[in-house]
Image (tube, rainbow, N blue to C red; front, top):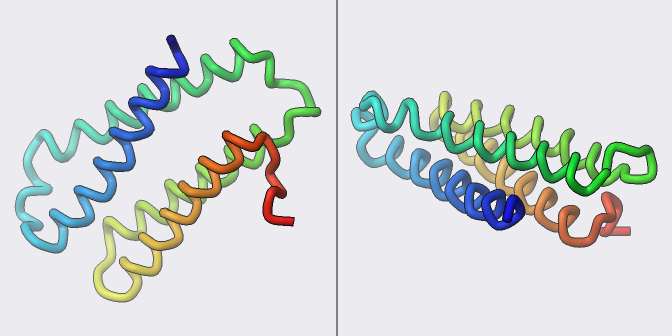
Length: 120
């Protein structure tokens, strides 16, 4: 049940991020509305909490589960690049957005394969 909840909030989070990038390009004034300021934080908080619950439920805190650490570092990259994408304009925004999407894809592949070096 927690896994389905987590997967649902992954989709909500990515749609929220992409949607906010589109809105920031087309109607930037909309981002000042309360919904656009609060909803992403609620979605991402629930996503993070459900992820932490899955880690404990799966007993993945041992050193043999390095893929969890890889996902955590990629998540930090995703957050950092997402902040840059939301706060900057032009080329910087799109480079950061592309980097954030690559981090997101990496997290997804590592989650499925349980291998942080799947590309080797």
